[in-house]
Length: 258
Image (cartoon, rainbow, N blue to C red):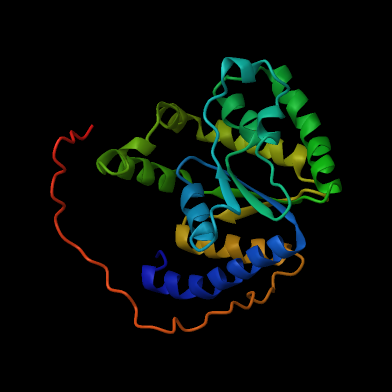
C-alpha cells in the first residue's frame, strides 16, 4: 500500500528544513553540487526533483532537463553540452536525465551506435573523475519501478488530460523494451559504478517513500549540511503602515493598448 499524502508531508517537512540548511551551507562554503536523476520512464524523476527543490532558491538550485540535441550539438564532444550547465561556486544543479542518456534511451532505441555506447561507457568514469577531483560533489541516483507499475502510470497519463503531455512517443515505443532497458542499465552500472562516483538505486514503486529515501541519502552525502540562518536586522517602521488602494482603472483618453 502506498504512503498516504499526509504521512508523506509530515515526514518531508523536517527533511525540507535540512535541505534549506544544506543550501545555506553550499552558498556559504562555495561548494558545487551535482545530482543526477536517472531511471525508468514514469519512475518519478520529476516528482523527486520537485520534492528536493520545493523550498530552495531557484537562483541557487537549478534543474536541467535538456531537449533532443541540435544538429550542432550532435557534432560536438558528447559531454560538451552538459558541461555548460555545471554549477558555479555555491550552486546546486539537478539533472533530470543526464549524460547517461547515451547508455539508456539512446542505446535501447537505436539513437546511438554500439561503438558510441562503448566509447561512452569507457569515458564516463574518467569524465566524472575530473569533476570530482575538481571538487564537485556528484550524486547519481537510479529510480526503479516494476513493469506493472510503469504500465499503470502510463495508463494514468493517457487517461488524465493534465498529464497527457508527459506521454511521449518514446514512452510508448519503450513499453515493449522493458527487458532491453534492464540489460542496458546493468551494463551501465557495471561500467560506471565507481568509488569516486557510485550509483544509488532507489525503489520508486511507492513514489512518496522513494522521494523520502532519496532525500535522506542525498543529505547524508553532503559533508556538513548545518548552517544557521544569517541574522537579519528588521527594525520597526516607525509609522503606521500605508494601505494600498484598489479599484478599476479608468481608460486614458487617446491611449490605445496593444
